[in-house]
Length: 407
Image (cartoon, rainbow, N blue to C red; front, side, top):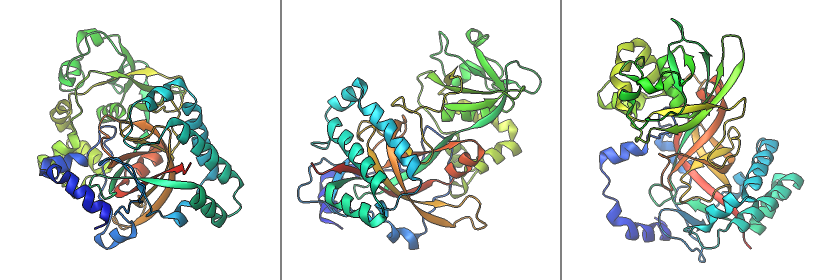
């Protein structure tokens, strides 16, 4: 165990009495029902260094970010899809120049000196280096010379971060209901502070009287309508071929309860076999159970049309596939640049447990009400079926490093 690990262990020993239910809850997130197999074989755990070695000058409190000297600089200097990274950086720079960002950074962060100005300057300098570096070696040398890394302390205060994925689905929809399109998405309305069961009925077809006339569109499949609520946004193809977009306009204020974990707890699906595809297949095989399990999640999401706009995160920025992440914004610096390492399963592989180590530059541009603590990260994977398949295989442990200038 590293020196910092021992220190944090002593500081948090009283908080380590975690029961099984609490541990299972860590593996569920509100933003998405995409729950895949835990993909790290025990033999591969040593490929990602979870232990944090602190620098002598580190200044931090437990459960957040730690200034670390244990940095994978060679991996950090290898950049995939440089243009996408630059575009995502530009979005964060736009946010950091706003008064909204000033208000967010005005509260006391757990890392002394991690200010909006420092994060902004770090992004500007990194953008210049990334644009001008002629090789990975040149970029690595510059980063070592000018930057330091704060590592997310993780769920165990040893740097272990649980990564999951989310995406924007694409479904068929209709402006008018008929025998095929029966399940609506609703606009925000008065009197919506009721649980799901009271708002739409057990079968999803008996809405409260004040919701009649508040329909935005109707979908063909009840589970698809539910998944749009879980994701918070969607692209919808209307019967005339037109594509419209919708995004969350608010909720009924009730906490999210996972129907996936309800299936596991009831012995319907084994936890180690729980994937998005398994969940969908279960309800295809047992459609009568939709009315039994849907009401167990009292949370209900309302929508507004966004007129073709891309999905937008909590910072008000368009999300970029594979480079925008959601974190606990009470702990992590909004808009900041980070480097993520995680193992993911190949969704098209013949062997279920075929995994690969994924290194990716990401920017902290979103949040989720169930993405809590320094050990949770949700990676936005894009729009449509393929993005959903790729998001569905991100459910693994890894590491997250925030890059900031030394001065």
